[in-house]
Image 1: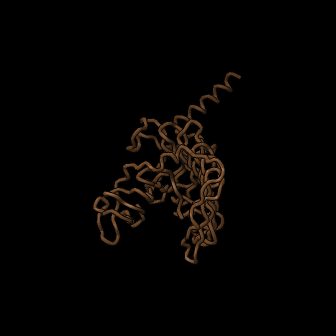
Image 2: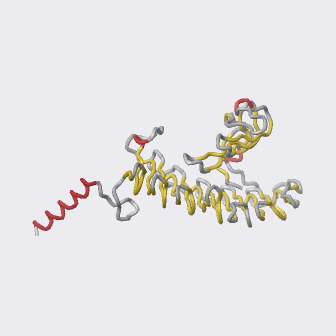
Length: 297
């Protein structure tokens, strides 16, 4: 019996020395972090010392998943410097295609967003959560990535904030906006082009529920320094005058969209792309402050 265990031990040691491991997804692996014909292939674990990234320790895992000839394939996991999972995204031929989940960097590792990507657009149902776990947005998209069907926004207390319908990316019918206590705040009527006209704001009837985040809404922040180029004037971001502008990166993808003051984005969206040029998230700014992430419309 002792001979039997000795043989098993020597076999396992041989596999470790050869670099043969079973990847964390439980698949019987090929060799970890291999290159085939000069290209990444098989299961890879990317450590901080392999990339120049701040806040991580050299042996911290940044991300892990499979490559097919240097293109991401299957589920990839990214991690925050804290070790919490940052995202789980499915790739095909190097593109984010399929289900994805992103997380907050908190002790509970709360889900931030989940949905389905089709290249550079959202497909089917998209859900975003507040950090307290309550749903923040429920949106639906068609195969072309355009808003389709019911779209809802929620307060942190779970109450619906805004509800409307869209068809092929155009808002249709009417939208209802609510106060945090459930009272109707206003009715918005959309025309054939999706432009809205408000019925006027109504006062709350029931005792108001004021969220902490709302108390800060009127305070102005510093804004985000302008980035990218304007297509029309070909001005650099820092040269943008006050007013509404759109800027674009070197790949001609939209970078910033909104109202600028003194060369900074104050009210609008900041589009962030990953190393492959795929849209990762949209940061939303209001009164010069970051208030959360938006979605592709």
